[in-house]
Image (cartoon, rainbow, N blue to C red):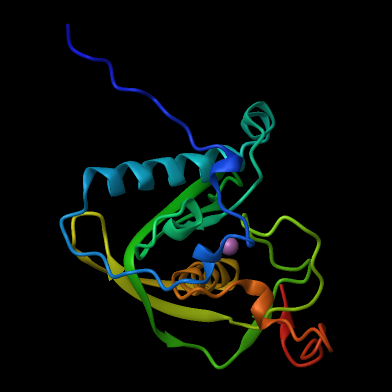
Length: 194
Ligand code: CO
């Protein structure tokens, strides 16, 4: 009898916390083709992010809502990220735009800076934080899709922040590193709040 595939799901406790030193390491470039394990990791990351943004499922599976995740957050030091961005169509109906980028790199950015007014969040930071995180308002990201095809994404506003946040993770950087502890709201009057 053929063995049935084990259907697994990522749980909030599978996402490593800031206390874990791995989050401070630099992730390695991926060499194609992706391994089956990497493909499965990407599937799990995407599934978590989608479910976490659907209230009933987030509650049912006890998921913390999140829009992006980098492989290091599930303990894999490889350069790939997943972003699930909720957007609205012309009838105001929400849907998810999904981005899976391997070896992502910011190749250009705006001079304009923005920040999340309510404060940035991270699935690996499980405490209240205050302060603003200055981010480029627009970025162009280059990288590869899961098959190794080169892709280029132009992102603005919230999506641009998500890319900067996730790419930071691959370099061992957390959003809290961008906040000046002595003056957490520094730049508030200069940068645009979103
Ligand atoms: Co994060």
